[in-house]
Image 1 (tube, helix red, strand yellow):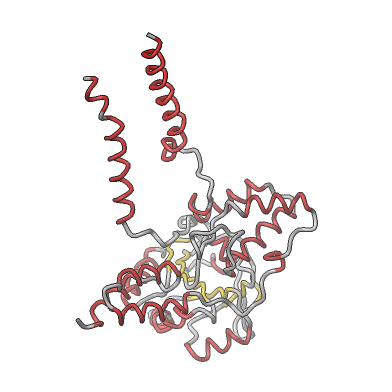
Image 2: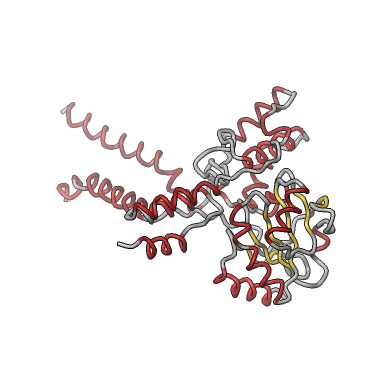
Length: 165
Length: 175
């Protein structure tokens, strides 16, 4: 068992630009202790953050509490681009901080939250938003609860009727 | 017939399990492609990132010739890895501009001195605004922009030697 082939295989599949890429590399190399170590080592640079201090509104709230509430609600439904499993409100990544700053500055400038969401969706796709849009692809998703409830009511009705007899 | 109907919930449940199993086995898609391909470069005018290079503005990217825009940072390790490939692209006659994300002037200068300098212009994007406008989700990323300023191609992650031909092809196609 030599570590090289699997290391090479892992390297081809990884995307050092993202932490998740490193995780994929890890998964790919799990059969090989050495490669796993290498993967852990390689994962460290992916977490590299810049030396610049965070943007002003990355951690500071807006002065107007109503606007801050609007911004907060939006930030909780926007996905962090580098962490992928967190909202930008939850992430400490530099990029999430810059995205919070972007959201707060635009809200402060009077832009509507849904316009900011649309701006980001135009750039990153619906992926960036945690709120699934209503479109042909997601109709089953939105229709499923109603359909299941209807089916349940129908079944229940059948049962009650039988019992009354 | 009624008997068959009784099996329906189980069938639905099994179908659900199969869907989930297939979804779990498939490796997750970790690259977020920019939706800006085929759209004009968003307007921006950045401050210079280093004194040795002129700054970058969107207007510099619609001067009739296609260009590469490399989104990089001195603190980004894969950006060092792709430096020889950017150098090779430059040698084949591809003009390259840079956008330095969240970077200090002295760090960029050090980075260029150490890893090579393929750039004509470098703009400083201290709060990632231009990166967001481009639909870029990390460093490094490289965009091919045609002569009229329309984004034609996006390469996510560091440019490996085997990626150079595809970027050259995208550059030629943008002419």
